[in-house]
Length: 68
Image 1 (cartoon, rainbow, N blue to C red):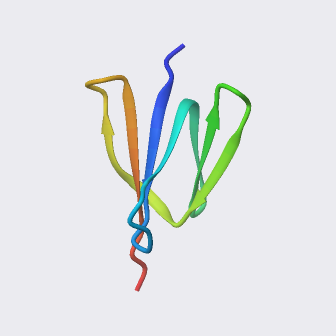
Image 2 (image 1 turned 90 degrees about the vertical axis):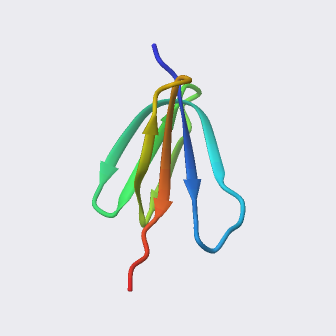
């Protein structure tokens, strides 16, 4: 099993949200659902994938969509 990390950056916040021990990422209309090894699920709405980095494990960076 490969565990990943999801990093969520939002324009309104200077701090990024980091979710570790990620086992699955699923896409829903307008949202991304993140599941962890411990059975936790988090739903992030209004975000899109900015980057997937696989050099040191799997790191998925999500960024808030700028809807105007």
